[in-house]
Length: 114
Image (tube, rainbow, N blue to C red; front, side):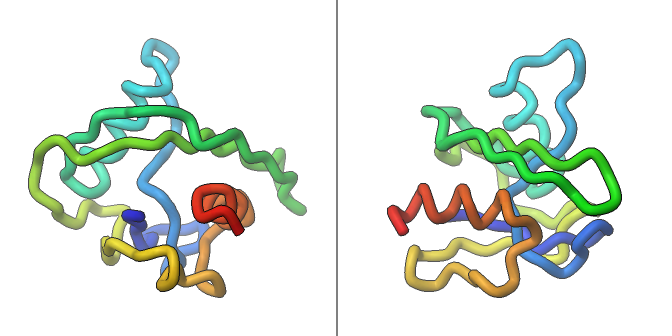
């Protein structure tokens, strides 16, 4: 599992997936590939859906995370402006207490079968 430690607010310093806002003219897969390249320099191939995860926020409209499964197909890992660190985690090493969002935790629990 590849996670990035956020370098910007909200939740700077906490771990999550590479991701961001979808452009109006792109598919989910294109968005995931673009955001991953922008944030950590890796080209990915999407292989499926992990799930959809939503939670309200106390001071805003909430968050909807679409989490896709993929494999690295090229590029070199590098830190973009939104990442302090990128790291591969085994299921046993996931930083459960330092995750950026509840939706990240929900997706990781589905991924790991917890």
